[in-house]
Image 1: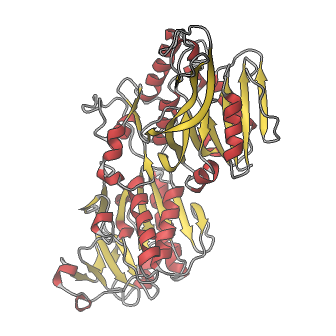
Image 2: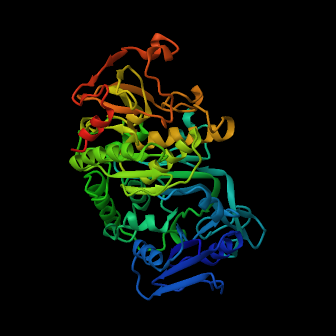
Length: 547
């Protein structure tokens, strides 16, 4: 199966309608797994090969039921859905088309108009609610009937949600009005209500499913959102498709589980321990990071003092077209491996042929700017850390290059302590420049930039020569740029080997630059600080690095 739709259900009057709606509107190989939690359905369910039932004579709770259905699934994707919902035509295909491995996706949410009440005496109809005791239009007090409508309320929808400082769910219409979200069909959302979420099945277990320590019900939206974001992933709303949810009202039209204030308090208390206390062991970020990401968040304007601060995680994305001489590649990798071992930084490598270094992704592509961007983007999406260092195959890095920790998620940091080294003469030159191979930034910012660079290059540029986005944030049109940049100087320099197969021009003479501004601080030398003499002894210099 492509998708398993997981439905925990107890005493759900409209469960058959939900199932029929899914079967009618699915367009992929999608199955439905229903957990009948302590009670058989009120009305018979459709007898269909794509519908599986699990029955418990005693209730195990909504969270446990969802986890049990997920364990039965063997599909690539799972979607948790409440038992009183309608879905868009082709919802499954639309959701699968826009779901990265570490994403949680929420469809646009509409209110579901399930039924009207009708007075059998005078025919007057009104919007669903508790069982009526009288008609507003006549003297009838006993004879009423439900008339099925089952339509989304077109003007009652929401795309963005949050939780407040007490971790209670809140709608957040104001967030969708921010300028950077204009025209976006896939957009970040801080939280959701928990009635529907979609993700890769493997991802569901990476974030440990639903935590049954909360109890049966409550805080599901907050839990899924926090796990999605704080694990290093992302939660988004997909406005290209939708689900419609029946919101319960009063008395005989309320929640099907017995629910006391004590149970609600238990769920909230457990939730606060996990997220306000920063005690979820799989978290790569703390809760303050999430609040700052969406800031300003109503009710969170003044963050409390840092609770449990963890250092941001770091990871390397190493990209190569495998073109330089093997000895240069090997020595640069060996030096990088020493940096990695000393600092415990994991490595994702993206190459055009397999290499035995880090977590290797092979992408056999032609040599061009677009291929470089695609390689970088693939590496970024495979990485999981907060901060990413982009690393090229023909640089010799000093360990101090990896000491910086960008303080925010909106800035690209360039290390300008770079010496260019000519492989033919051993001549070394220094000048001030920003190169992506000596840049680091938060992963989300890098993904946003390189996603735009790929899209622009594919649509408007020449894949071989395009400079869209070559040195973030510059290179993109101003209305497409994200973030800003700053520069710094590491204690010791890194060495950029300029050889016959370099991707960019091998400029080793000041006359090769258009202006003085392009090579400010120009310095020529026969040796590189810390590393030693290079002029006339390039081969010996390389050998020195592996002694």
